[in-house]
Image (cartoon, rainbow, N blue to C red; front, side, top):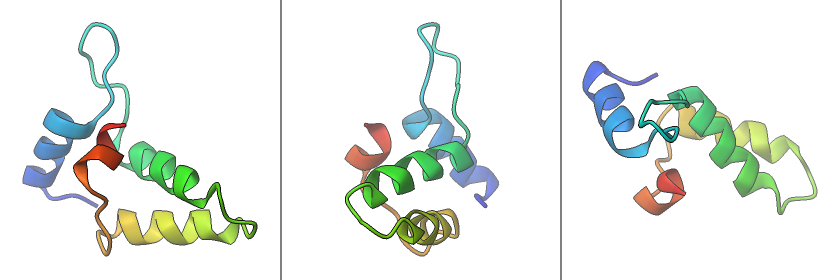
Length: 69
Protein backbone atom coordinates (compact mmCIF):
# COMPACT_ATOMS: atom_id res chain seq x y z
CA UNK A 1 0.00 0.00 0.00
CA UNK A 2 1.27 3.44 -0.88
CA UNK A 3 1.42 6.48 1.34
CA UNK A 4 -0.54 9.52 0.23
CA UNK A 5 2.62 11.03 -1.26
CA UNK A 6 3.55 7.74 -2.88
CA UNK A 7 0.12 7.56 -4.51
CA UNK A 8 0.54 11.10 -5.85
CA UNK A 9 3.92 10.21 -7.37
CA UNK A 10 2.52 7.00 -8.85
CA UNK A 11 -0.44 8.86 -10.37
CA UNK A 12 1.74 11.65 -11.76
CA UNK A 13 4.59 9.56 -13.16
CA UNK A 14 3.71 5.90 -13.59
CA UNK A 15 -0.02 5.22 -13.84
CA UNK A 16 -1.21 4.36 -17.32
CA UNK A 17 -3.39 7.02 -18.90
CA UNK A 18 -6.03 6.87 -21.59
CA UNK A 19 -5.98 9.05 -24.70
CA UNK A 20 -7.60 11.89 -22.69
CA UNK A 21 -4.99 11.78 -19.93
CA UNK A 22 -7.30 10.08 -17.43
CA UNK A 23 -5.72 7.51 -15.09
CA UNK A 24 -6.86 4.01 -16.05
CA UNK A 25 -4.59 1.89 -13.84
CA UNK A 26 -4.35 1.55 -10.07
CA UNK A 27 -1.13 0.86 -8.22
CA UNK A 28 -2.32 -2.70 -7.60
CA UNK A 29 -3.04 -3.21 -11.29
CA UNK A 30 0.41 -1.88 -12.20
CA UNK A 31 2.02 -4.24 -9.69
CA UNK A 32 0.16 -7.18 -11.26
CA UNK A 33 1.16 -6.07 -14.77
CA UNK A 34 4.84 -5.86 -13.83
CA UNK A 35 4.79 -9.12 -11.87
CA UNK A 36 3.13 -10.95 -14.76
CA UNK A 37 5.71 -9.64 -17.24
CA UNK A 38 8.63 -10.52 -14.95
CA UNK A 39 7.31 -14.01 -14.25
CA UNK A 40 6.47 -14.66 -17.89
CA UNK A 41 9.88 -16.19 -18.53
CA UNK A 42 9.64 -18.57 -15.58
CA UNK A 43 8.29 -22.10 -15.91
CA UNK A 44 6.95 -22.04 -12.35
CA UNK A 45 4.08 -19.53 -12.35
CA UNK A 46 4.30 -19.14 -8.55
CA UNK A 47 6.83 -16.43 -9.31
CA UNK A 48 4.12 -14.04 -10.46
CA UNK A 49 2.56 -14.05 -7.01
CA UNK A 50 5.95 -13.74 -5.32
CA UNK A 51 6.93 -10.79 -7.50
CA UNK A 52 3.56 -9.11 -6.93
CA UNK A 53 3.83 -9.50 -3.18
CA UNK A 54 7.34 -8.05 -2.98
CA UNK A 55 6.59 -5.16 -5.32
CA UNK A 56 3.21 -4.45 -3.69
CA UNK A 57 4.75 -4.39 -0.21
CA UNK A 58 7.53 -2.13 -1.54
CA UNK A 59 10.26 -4.64 -0.70
CA UNK A 60 11.44 -4.33 -4.28
CA UNK A 61 10.80 -1.26 -6.40
CA UNK A 62 11.46 -1.61 -10.12
CA UNK A 63 13.15 1.25 -11.97
CA UNK A 64 11.20 3.95 -13.78
CA UNK A 65 11.41 2.34 -17.26
CA UNK A 66 9.75 -0.80 -15.89
CA UNK A 67 6.83 1.15 -14.42
CA UNK A 68 6.48 3.42 -17.42
CA UNK A 69 6.49 0.71 -20.06
